[in-house]
Image 1 (tube, each protein chain N blue to C red):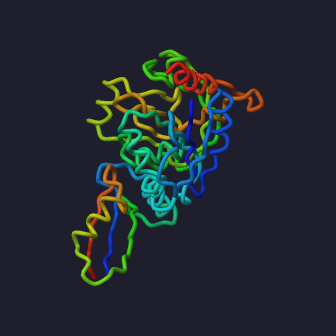
Image 2: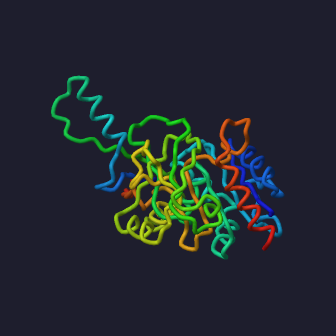
Image 3: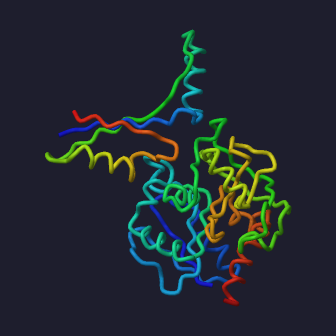
Length: 76
Length: 222
């Protein structure tokens, strides 16, 4: 089985990199980009029988820093 | 004093830190991240700067889960002294031994220069020699030194006098200009600036020497 974990900065946490991307898009002439948030996608190739709860534990223990980041798990 | 300097793949201030500690009179052992125990009689664990594990995933994230870290956590939770400098500070936050997180510098630039800091509290073995209100100059060299924590955490560490060092002019967007913080028991210090790069006249700065001398002195009498 495969799972995809999306890690994003929590709302309210300033994202300097996303902000820089927003500026760059504006400089390229794309008007109307009001906000950019940059996160990461982690794809996991898992042994059959791995539970979504175990993936959640992986997120809590390593994949996300829950002080500043939130995560979402999709089983593919 | 017996100090253990942790070494991860990508650490690059480990030898500087060992030199500064030895210069203050400490007996230093380098401890590889795959070890699972600290040397017998360790008084201080020192986590150096650098780019542990290439800063993969998040700065300090993988080092904070390395095999040696169970022993470091037990040491800290048992009242041991731990100092984490730069990447070492990131590791302590990732390990949850200090509150908050370090994010990309607000200006997105890597900042590498000597900076003036205010010593905010004298109530720790690390800062007692300076005294509260003293100003020191340590070099900084980081890309992710923007200290952030939620409002409640910030209020708590400020209220408990746990801000150890504050930037005179905040270079990186850190909340309240925080450069270094202490644990609740005041024995774990994490800071972004590098006292070990200001510990010898040949480095052009010596404000860091007092920190290492005070540490070594504290354990001579213990």
